Amino acid sequence: MSEPIKEQSTPKFRVAAASLVVAASTLVGIAVNEGYSSKAYYDSGHVATDGFGQADGVKITDTTTPVRALIQLEKSVNIYAQGVRNCIQAPLFQYEFDSYTDLAYNVGVNAFCKSPIAVKANQQDYQGACNAMLGWYIHDHQGHLIPGLVSRRQKEYSTCIGQS
Image (cartoon, rainbow, N blue to C red; front, top):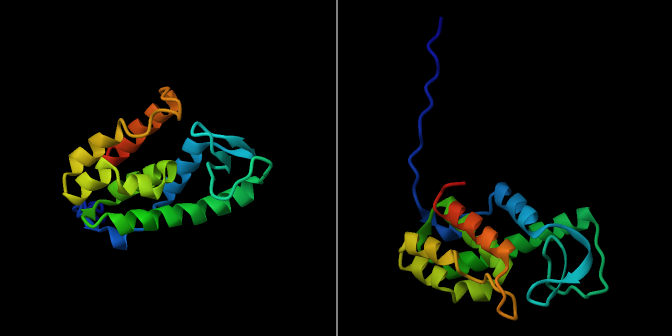
């Protein structure tokens, strides 16, 4: 009788952000967080949005299908991930990169790269970067708290600290 195979735990190492790609689970998570709409609508920032939170080039009269929306989501997330790779020079865990990409998809690359989150990550204050996510962009354009964004930031924070 052979001995059972023992699983070896692989140590976790931070790697250069430039070498990271978006995990499939992050793509799915963004789709779930954003929700799907076949018809364009105005989001909380009063931006025309359709599919899975797609805003680039969307007109309020636009419509989409689930397949087109998923294809566009994948393309868009890869663009946002590249933006995160461009502004974060510090080494990251995969889950930190995924949480930053999720956040950047929601708030925009420029906002993310200018945020205290990116500043702290580049200073290698990883816990501070994750903590800063909790209060970032959780209000609409009129200053009202958006409970859905509070929940989303909590999920991104949990991912950022490696708990999801």
